[in-house]
Length: 174
Image (cartoon, rainbow, N blue to C red; front, side, top):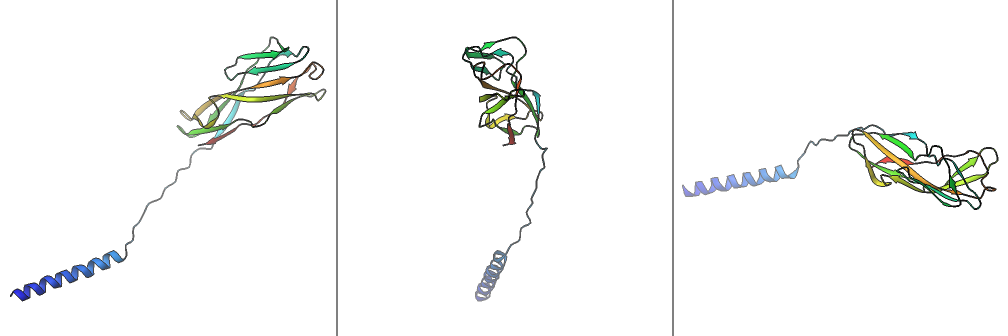
C-alpha cells in the first residue's frame, strides 16, 4: 500500500509540474488604452500695447511700460497726457491646464506710416512672468498682461506722428 501511495503522490507531482510548465509557457492579457481630446488654446488681445503720448525732446531715451500699467521715462523723454496701457490677452482652453508663455525673443519695430521712421520695442515682460507652466487655465480662462520698453530717439530721428507695428507671443499647453 505504501508503494501505491508513493506512486500516486509522484503522479500528482508530475502532473502539477507539467501543468505548471504549460500554463507558464504562454499567457495572453487583454489591456486597455484611452485618449482624451481637449479644446485647442485660443488667445484674444483685449487691449493693445500702448505707450501713450510723449515728446523725445533733445536726446530721447526710453519709456518703460510695466505689465501693471506703470509708465516711466528716462533721458529727455517727456511724458504727456492721453491713454496708455499694457497689452492684455485672454487665453481659453482646457480647465486647470498649465500654459507656457513665450514672449518675443527679438525687438519689434514701430513705424511712422508718413515718414518711415522707426522706434524699437524690447525688454519684454509679463504678469505672470513668462516661461514654462506660467499660467493655469482656471475655469478654462487665463489673463496675461504684457509690458515692454520703447527706445525713443531725438526729435529728428522720431518726428511727430503715430507709430505702429506688431509682435508675436506664443501660448502652448504644458
